[in-house]
Image (tube, rainbow, N blue to C red):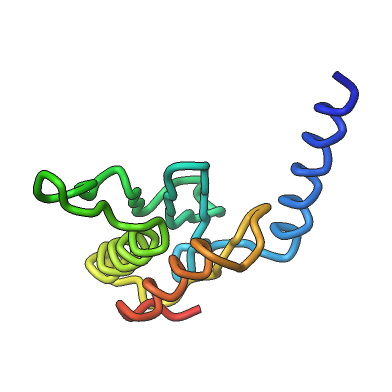
Length: 124
């Protein structure tokens, strides 16, 4: 139990270090990333009003289109999520954001999500 608690505390500290310098506003919200073993999600958060402006998850996209077809890899789904968040943000007239990687390294699916958001026109 001690080992589990220690790892939980370390995880929370990593997240706190990453968020210590980041604050989202209505004009420039925080793009927060959540990654699980299977899925990835992102949301734009206005920390001043403490509310989510837009969000997207890879659960919204199809796993595989046809029977026997390959399902998309996690990085590809992360690109889709990044693009979706950026497009929804632009519909709400948001052009810039502050990227919050949370407790995750800027690598793999987290970097792919950021790349997809940038490709769709969101600046950070």
